[in-house]
Amino acid sequence: MTEKLWRDGIAMYRTEIDEIDKRVVEVLASRFEVAKKVAALKRAWRKPVLQRDRAVQVERSYIAMGERYQLSEQFMSRLYRLIHEETCRMEREMIQDECAGQGN
Image (cartoon, rainbow, N blue to C red; front, side, top):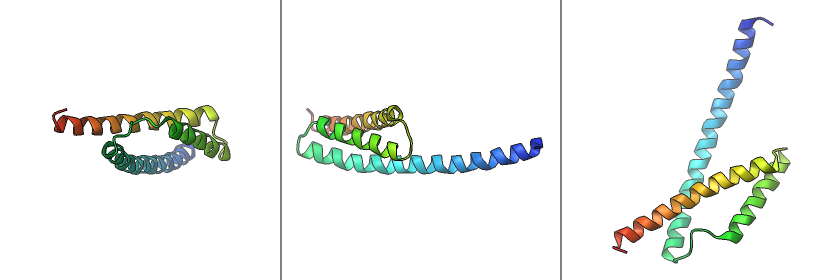
């Protein structure tokens, strides 16, 4: 295999990975947009940001989905927790903004 074949081959795969990464970010952005709607409901109904039972349920779901694609339980759990932490941060920020706007 020549060096040029190597560079061309790796470039093709890197382009494919870049496109997939772009879709991952787009899907995450969509998920966070829905999470903002959830935060608005929680704010309106004065519900806490963290719903522990739901968090456990969703983490288990992530792990099960990962198993179908041979992704480790540890990886899926870490991925879920990162997404969940960011979601909670966004929700808290939205709720605090609302409270600040009301002079609370």
